[in-house]
Image 1 (tube, one colour):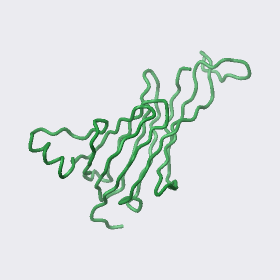
Image 2 (cartoon, rainbow, N blue to C red):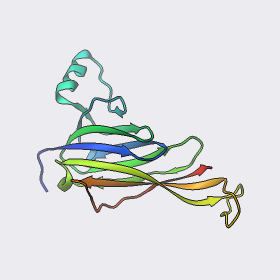
Image 3 (cartoon, helix red, strand yellow):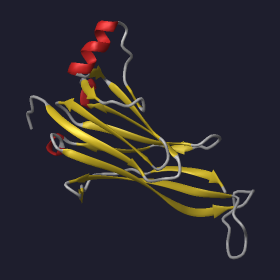
Length: 170
């Protein structure tokens, strides 16, 4: 689909008990223009007073955007882009190995108001040796899975979601 530009409003909902970092970029290194009013969203820094004033009116241009969302919190932004958006989700817990989650939003779904929700699910428990805890054994580590879901007009979109994953100390 050929698009001149899309203006998409996105609300990120972190419904987990963990700090999340979401990074996203446009397809084929395309420019993004970001409109936001929070310090949780990081784009390239402005160097001069003129750059800062211009960004208030015309948005901040960037190729990569970082969105830091504290636990049980949300962040809002508007993005202008003419290509697919690629998202990566990472759980920020010290001393854990993370597998990054991901999904992409095609231009067909842009130019709308989108909500992206992140929920946690707990998996298998493990003992000190890394063995699976069965019956009365008390787990020391547990799998944490962060599931992403994009909503358009309150209905979930059927996208190819890859869950973020890590093993946390209980």
